[in-house]
Image (cartoon, rainbow, N blue to C red):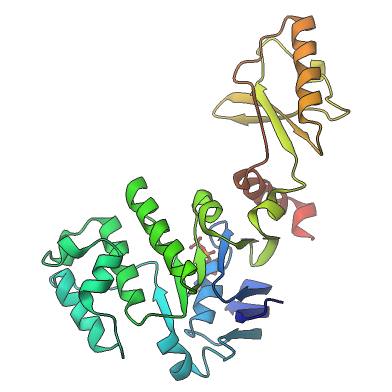
Length: 315
Ligand SMILES: Nc1ncnc2c1ncn2[C@@H]1O[C@H](COP(=O)(O)OP(=O)(O)OP(=O)(O)O)[C@@H](O)[C@H]1O
């Protein structure tokens, strides 16, 4: 357990009618830590987040934010948290400055408008109507409003969706600064690079449960290095060599077959050597040859695929 635990979720369950959207999820987030919830569509990330934000009571299990029940003790918790929803409800006819002023009216001890707009790089858009903002700029306005109350805990639900790469990187810098200054952040994202860049720890959810959790290094460790190349047309799969005893797996995407080996431990160099010697002796050209460590994306895709099979589903 983290010394200063700010968010705690224990065996949380939530259902919508007959559908169990969250099926026993547990994790903790310490003060000044950024925890990312990743997962396939419909995995239960938003439902978990909304429970922590106090929008619904836990169906079963316990959730705590700053030591309190966010639903029952909403009045105590709400002023200390900032929420950036997936789609903020703005009035398109108001300007950025008017929208900020309006929200400041509801926020005790709010930061000055110029300060929050400066934080998210929207100071030069203050006089622009919200409907004239780009999708990425609207997301930044969402973030500005979430920061008005100088929250101790920040909930970011897909914060950079719709942003161009430059705006995304700028937002990552803002979030990093907030975390460095002690803000605790729970983030959901579909951008694995975002989690790699920002998360101290993360969880990969699928169908209401956490399939993997830890730091990026911990989650990726044990998934092996990968050697891949395009399957040569003239070759049969059984003709490929086993590397260190490991056979090739074939994946077909868009009509193109790729051969992949997953090499555990420190076998990458030896495996590659074995493959190149075989290719040389057999006169086979290995187009698109790549050798690399497992990435979060590999783990994510394997987690979702494995969990979709009957063996995965029974775990
Ligand atoms: N209000 C609701 N009523 C009924 N079912 C819902 C409701 N909200 C979510 N669900 C269902 O619960 C499951 C989990 O949804 P949730 O939005 O928590 O997933 P998510 O991981 O955030 O997905 P995404 O990545 O697509 O945003 C989904 O199957 C979804 O269809």
